[in-house]
Image (cartoon, rainbow, N blue to C red; front, top):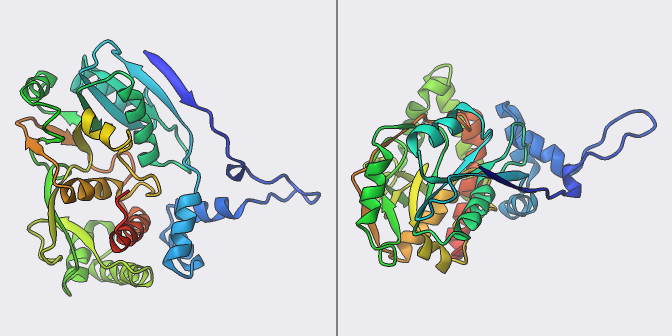
Length: 333
């Protein structure tokens, strides 16, 4: 096992000193980030209310610190296939399952963010893990969430990848599950989308009427910040036919040669834990890169790391705001 780290210190991460009345003052960045990362949906609504327009919000997203991380590696001698996994705790049960069961024997690069890292940015951390992986000149770089479970043995994965020319194939998808390798589309919503969203979120709300109320609030925020395009499964009737692709979401396999052509960076880290993967895959398909689908299966414990709830749905809107901004202005990265 090897450990490296990022000890970056940002002044706007710190609280201002106490005054003579023993009051603590925070920077505006801290205040807004505390609202954004709150578990209370009302706090997140206050966060969106603070900004008058999309440009102000995106400026905040760009200036937001990226958080700290450390790199922890296992099996460094195995370098054809390297797995990059963001995790809160490298000694936690999810990370342990990854290295002892799912990817046993493979070179694993954990990017550990720690618990309570309120400036956590998954895109930034994964980019750091990819940068470290490229130092070993691998053929393939696998990006995986830590909250996964084993279905097929790792030898199946290795055998399937050994058949593929990584100079010709840029990305490999595995068998579709509910949360990865999903045929999807990116397009404008139909009028029925709010109702479908409310039904989809039924388990997160007290009742269907509460779901409709929350959906209408979300739509109001999206309208204010000019969100016009959304991702949805290919068979969804909520979204009109648009750009079609395959969404890798929490498990993706990329040729190291492809990532090198993109200056060693896969994700735009202005995104804050939402839509960075969709942004990357949208660019991948627009550029008409080669891909292949292999017969390998892995399972997902959906939301075990970042959670699933109305608070996360509201935070995800910020990702859609920035994604729509990039799409509208034809910004590739």
